[in-house]
Structure formats: C-alpha cells, structure tokens
Length: 399
Image (cartoon, rainbow, N blue to C red; front, side):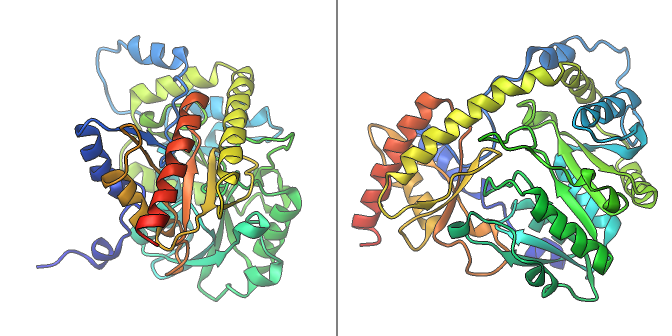
C-alpha cells in the first residue's frame, strides 16, 4: 500500500526539517542562535497569561464553530481602529492564521484550480495548497528591486480559466516588503477584471517601519466581496503557541463556506480564545513600543549583513524577516554545515534556506530568510558568528 499523492508530494517544512541538526548541536553543548523561525523572544503580555491562569470553568466544553462572539466582536473592533468597518459575523476564529489560509483556499477554489502567489512566499502556502489540491502559480519577484509587485501584464500572463485567486502577504513573509496603496490597487483592478478573489495575509500589519502605514485590502470598498483577510494573534501579541487566528470576509457566501469547513473541525480552543480576548482588551497602545523594538532589531541586522562582502539584501519595510542572497551556491548545505560542523567559541547560527519559500524549481538556492526575533545583544553576537561561518564555508567547502 502507498500513501496518497498529496501525502507523497506535500513539501516538507524548509524551516523545521533542520531541527534535528540543531537539537544534536544543543545536546553536545553548543549555543545555537535561532534566526530561522518567526518565534519572537518578546515576552507574551501579562494579561494574556493571566487569562490562561485564571480560567476556572467547571467544564471545558465545546464552543461555537466560528469562535466566541465576544472575541469576534473584539477583532471587529480592532479593525475599526484602522478605519475598517466589520461586524462579528465577518469573522471566523481559526486554529492560527494557518487554518485561515486553508479555509480561504478551500472556500474559493476546487481541486485542480489555480492560485497566483508572488514568490518568495510563506512556505506553508505550498502545504495548504497541496492539502486543498490546488496548483500554486508563482510570480517571481527579485531582491534587487526590493521584491516589489510587477506590472499588471505580468500578473495577467499567469491567469488561466482555472485561476481563482491571488494571494498577497503585506507586510511580507519572507521579504519584509510592504505593498503600497498603488500596488494593492493594481491587484484589485486585476481581480475585478478577471473575476478573482484576493486573499490577504495581514498578520504583520502592526510591524511597519520608517513612517510607512499599512494598507489593508479591506479598505478597497470596490472589492469588498472579493477579499478574504488572514489574521492571527501569534506575532501581534508574541504568543505563537496559542494558535488563534481569524479568517475575515464580508462575502456572505464565502463566510458560509468557511463556516461549514470550520464546523467539520468542531471549534477553536476555548482557553486560548479567552487569552486572545484579553490581548485585544489591552488596546492599541500596546503596539508602538513593540514596533519600535523590531525596528531597532531590523536596523542592527541590516547593518551587520550589508557589511559582509558578497551579501545582497534590501532593507525590509515591515514584518521581522529579511531575504538575503549569499555568495554561495547551496544554502541548504550551508545551513546544515553551520549546525553540524561550524563552531565559534561553542556557538553557531541557524537560518532558513529560502528555496522552500519558492514554488518555481531551482529558485532561491543561494538565498536565506533571517528572522530578527532575538534581542539586540544576541543579534549582534549572532552576526559575528554567522559572518565567521560564512567566510569559513566559502574558503573550505565551496572554495
């Protein structure tokens, strides 16, 4: 017997598949600086943890499939603070932003249909497209021009009779790009012209730098029935393990489809929803100090990377990632070597090879994604270790 085609072909996580090498390094006494994954070291706010500790319901029973009403109202209120009018019944609470992606994919497209995604992109889009049996049609962007969205004709060249949606992530994972109102409007016009949905992954919307402002796809009133927004508390409130997200749409048919899929998994977790409600009750004042901290970290990492000969990187405008081109041929081999063979004073660094953030075969082989989720002191030390490792690798492995 064999497993399903989807089970055979689904992409392994390009981030997590190197974890055994990191575990082995740690077991041998090595200090590993983890710059490979978006798991921030900023403490989870106390009200969130207090909500978990104080939960004392006598029975941990099922909740509503779409999530508790008070949490959905709180999320609608959060968007209202950004000038976006929503009601609770536009919001479905999901198992992290990841399930919101799957619900969106499954609700707008049938097996064999196509979704267009600018690449590099969040690697799990590949996995959820496989699960929904959809075909990802990549549109390759370039580090040299800051991963900006291309002219409309490049999008339209990818559209076929089976195209159902365009996926945009802004601020972007892994590139850190923040799409302008003009770029987003360009895609909105394409979607309206070709009768497509737009799925907007906006989980990093608070983390925008250099005085820029985030523009949500929900703000394009002419596309209100076409937009599905993926949201999450994971990065926003530094609680990735809570697994609470949201799928948001003002299209009643799409909402109904997503709700029926949600009913099949019964309900999102109760205690974590209470924690999420406590998070949203903190108010908008929570975000600015956190945003400033990430901006400082970005500046430290960018300064350090641009000082390394042969490295190509553009300063990200948002999120907490950088896409970096290295002067080597195979970053998967390099990442493995850093974990298994390289030590500087008992320390090494783990980054993520970026080939897994592409759908086009052969792309991203010389690129990595770096996450600036460590405090400044650790980032500075990690840069010293990383540079030493890269120089030794070039001299001894790819000489």
